[in-house]
Length: 263
Image 1 (tube, rainbow, N blue to C red):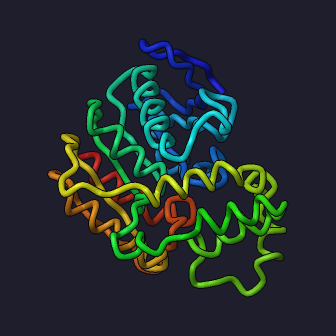
Image 2 (cartoon, one colour; image 1 turned 45 degrees about the horizontal axis):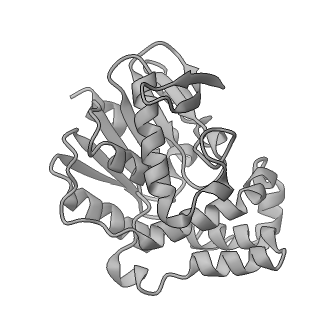
Image 3 (cartoon, helix red, strand yellow; image 1 turned 135 degrees about the horizontal axis):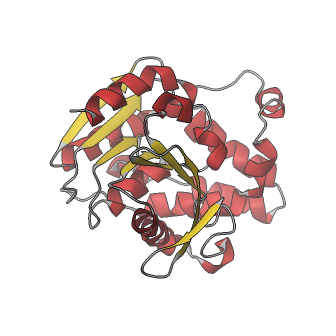
């Protein structure tokens, strides 16, 4: 991790790959920096910037210091500090909660472009009954951390189901780290449940909103809702791709992203 400090004296940490235009990659709720490993080779002409989100590493506030209603503001503040700390006009590329953070950060900070894969926004009808944060929190309180994170995986990452989830997790290298993030994922999900999408998002930068047909229906809908709320947006949906789209199908997604950025 490369340490740096913004003009606001916020300490940031990130991994830097290449010397091209900064492409700040913001992960979602699981497998923090490792999420972007399959993505980076597809964008070698850019200077990949992979930060450790606050609460998922040693940077900024520790998880215990941030309540659910402060999570998004904390992350937006951190992304703006990253933008300030890197040279050049950055592009923000976010996945899930990272996509929501990218869009919110771009409302008051100048960036060259935003790419947002299935931003973590709940449609109104779905949010009214959303209880994932409560169910996960209850399991964590009962000492069932693995079960809590499994509920997140089942509802968000693989809503169509996995034949043998335990076997799948046993082969997932980052699974132990994900279990360690249980409390932070609870706070993040509660933040998502509290967030309300405005009628208009004041983002001046051109924005590419992406989705996949195999992801959760509510996130596919929210991706379209976010697209509709943006003044300069393009929407692309990938057939047969899940919520893990950028990491699961980087070679499929890269041409759309590159074409958008080079216009």
